[in-house]
Amino acid sequence: MHRPHHHDAPEPALAPAAATHDHSHDHSHGQGHGHGHGHHATDTDWSALAALLEREGELHTPAFAQAAQWLGELTAGAPVGRVLDVGSGPGVVAGLLADVFPAAEVVAVDRSAALLARAEARSSGRVTTRQADLPGEFGLLGAADLIWSSQAIHHLGDQQAALASLAGSLRPGGLLAVAERGLPLRFLPRDLGLGRPGLQARLDAAYEDAFAAMRAQLPGVVDEVEDWSAMLSRAGLTPTGSRTFLVEWPAPLAAPAREHLHAQLERRREQLDGILAADDLAALDVLLDRDSQAGILARPDAFYLVAVTVHTARAAAAE
Image (tube, rainbow, N blue to C red; front, top):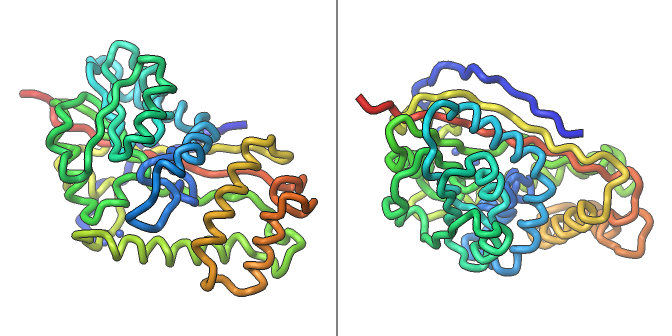
């Protein structure tokens, strides 16, 4: 079952008050992409992560499809001739946007040639690709009626400046949609019978520390209160609502979801070695054991639950 939860009427934009798959990311969200791609380093090998990101995007397709339909509703009555997916990763969402806006030119934009190759291969000609080193080449993307960016802005040091650059690429009356954070992935019960109860909460806490360290190392980093509606307002746009879309794959999980969780846990085990307590690392080792009935590939109580939040805002119409 895949259920959207939403609040369409945003709070009034507030004065600035300060910065964080990912979701995706390992929090997943990510569109599976991003550079919201499940990492905490600036030198990530996207080629090696391409299959992981594509599988994550496919698992999250129910939420992204609902989000794309919502964007269609928000742009109803206005011509949409060009759509940009900025930080497109393997192009899962770009393809969904092409479904909703069949008359538009849909452009997947990413710095990774490997991910763009995936986007082009899966699009059947409905999506074009553009390699760009963001944020330095924001101004070279050309104008668009709709710009989507999922789990990418938080990988840029100055998030407010990035939003302003994207806003500047909108045509009059155009719409900017930014998917950031949401709620972290849940996939195990509180007490999973390995070590101390609450492993997932401790993984989340360690992740947040690692995420903050990643942000601190970005070039030109600026601390920012991550009130996305307020940030969109400061970028010169008028907020048009935020909605959260739920991805729910209940237990027992099918093999693709289990393999994705196994890959995510392998990355988390590597990232948090020396940070997590020894008993939590031992629990992760059991979860990663392909031959163990307590492992993530076999246990019957594993599920997949994540929330994707999309913030939208519109450029002023032509006078």
